Length: 200
Image 1 (spheres, rainbow, N blue to C red):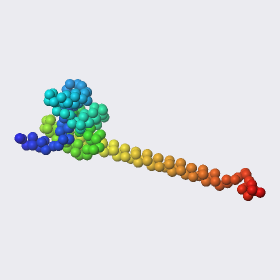
Image 2: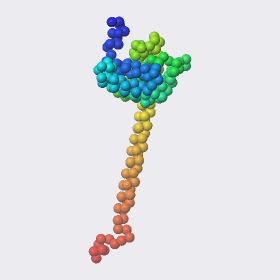
Image 3: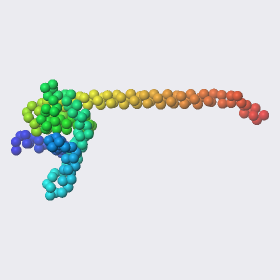
Image 4: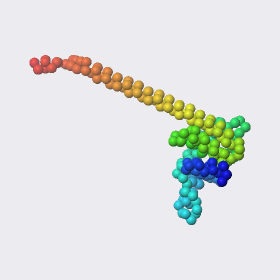
C-alpha cells in the first residue's frame, strides 16, 4: 500500500460519502443528466444484490440533492473566487465536482464546520485531480467560507434587528393598551349619577 493509499484509508464514512458524491456529480455532467436521477437509479439498483451496486450513503444523497437544488448559487460563489485566468466552465470536470461538494457543505450544511469542509475538499482534490488543484481549491473554498461567514453574520444581525423591532412594537402596543384602560377608568361615572345618588 502506498503512502497516498494509507492516507485516504484513514478517512471515515463522511469522507467516503463525499467521494461518492463527487463521482456522481462527475458522471452526471459527463452524461448530461440530473445527478439526482443517478442517485435514484443507484438506490434502486443497490436493492438487488445481483446488480453488485453499492448502496448510496444517506449523506451522499444529501450532498447531491443539495448541490442540484442550489447549483447556480454554488457556482456563482465558486466563480467569484477563481483567479482571473481561471473560469469555472474551463476547469476539469472533476475539479468542478469537488468544488461543488465542498462549497455546498460550507454554504448550506451548518452541521459541518467550514474548516472541516475545506480541508476535506482539498484532500478530495489531492486524490482526484492534478498537482495544482489542491492549492487553488483551498483558495477558492477559503473565499467561499468567508462569504458564508459574512452571510451568517448579516442574517444574525437582521434577525436581531427584527427581534428588536418586534419587541418595540409589542412594548408600544402594551403601553397603548394600558393608557386606554387608565383613560377609561379615570371618570367611570362621568355624566351620570353617583352610586349614592342612585340609592337615594
